[in-house]
Amino acid sequence: MSHSASASLASLFVPHLRPAAQAYAELPSLETVLTQVLASARAAWPRVRLDDAVFLRHLAERVPPSSEPERSLRTFPTADLFLACACVQGDAAAHAALEAHFLPKVAAAVARVSPGADAASEVCQVLREKLLTPEPGRPPRLADYQGQGPLAAWLRAAAVRTALNLRRSSQRQARAEEEALADATVPGDHPELELLRQRHRTDFQAALAEALAALPSRERTVLRLHLVEGLSLERIGTVYRTHKSTVSRWLARAREEVLAGTRSRLAERLRLSDGELHSLLRDVPGQLDQSLSSLLASKG
Image 1 (cartoon, rainbow, N blue to C red):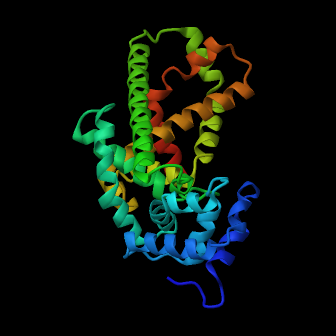
Image 2 (image 1 turned 30 degrees about the vertical axis):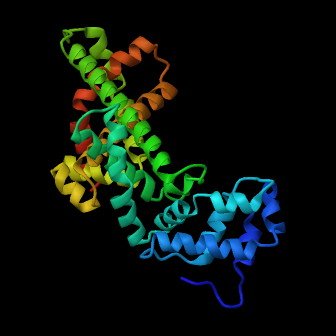
Image 3 (image 1 turned 120 degrees about the vertical axis):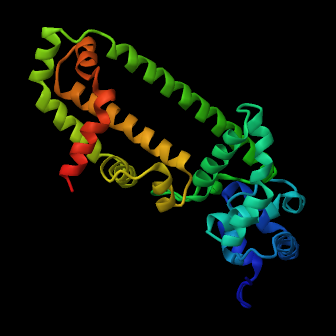
């Protein structure tokens, strides 16, 4: 998409340069160089539609300080940055190009830390969500790509980090389940513990309700769909146009946040020892879905 006839490429680029990168503004051949690098980027991705002004601002905000601005511009991975910028802007052709040309290449990198086709598929799905979905108050994460190296290398690094995070999350989940199972085998005939729970039942219910209300809207909705409406992970994934593994992570994160929020609220309100607080909340993980289902149903 061309810029207006009255606006030069340089005039769309220079105002957005960082103070440390003002050497580009003094480049006599700036208009020529910008014309050439922009043409090269468009030739690399002919189906992608991106306004000149949007891209040149994106480029200006990311070019590094340089004593050789022309050389820096000509060697900058402009085509990669052009595609990333178009993805951030939501261009469907750019999303398709990222899917076809880049995401398959992360599988080999993922395999080094999480072998198996399922792991690679899950990592790619998480990357799609993180890189292409805006978050409250910020653009999609792909905007973080600064062009300091090839986009493929940046994506491989992001994929490896994601794979490691997912593996750590799975390990934490397994440990939590083991601890919950161990707690469930402890005899429950402790009069002092039962008295403690009875005394603070109202405080617990209030803290749980507040922690649930503090969740982001999507997490509360997904919990309601799954726990109250009985929708499967696959069905919820269809609603949100995402993979069931992503829905599973949303649910796990929501449960973790509710538990953490409930604990922190109780700690603020009640002057209990760590042991008493642990005892009060010991059986909560195993009964959490039932408690959340009741709360969500009662709130319509």
